[in-house]
Image (cartoon, rainbow, N blue to C red; front, side):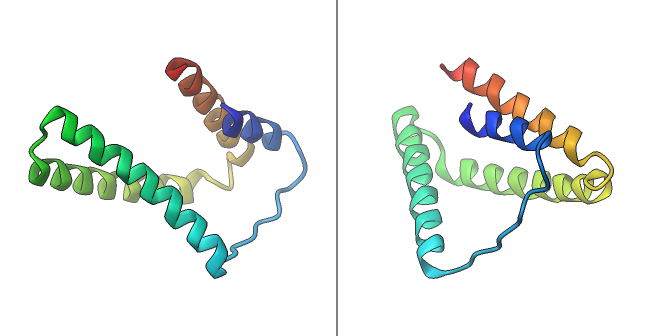
Length: 101
């Protein structure tokens, strides 16, 4: 919800300064966050006795396909609808956060 609220605020604010910081400390923090997420998924799979090979294959294929589609759509419409897309994305994240709570 906080990330969504920040996106909504940025949609109406000044131009955002992009920083593609690839230093080891930033990468290490991202790696830890990704590992925690993967740990949560792995524990969930263990509780539900999931066929791991099927799950990994489906997750990989679907993630790849949706990433390609999202990148294509983002490149085509990103510049034209930048603020509206950021606002809509923020609202969706807020709603997802409310649903989870």
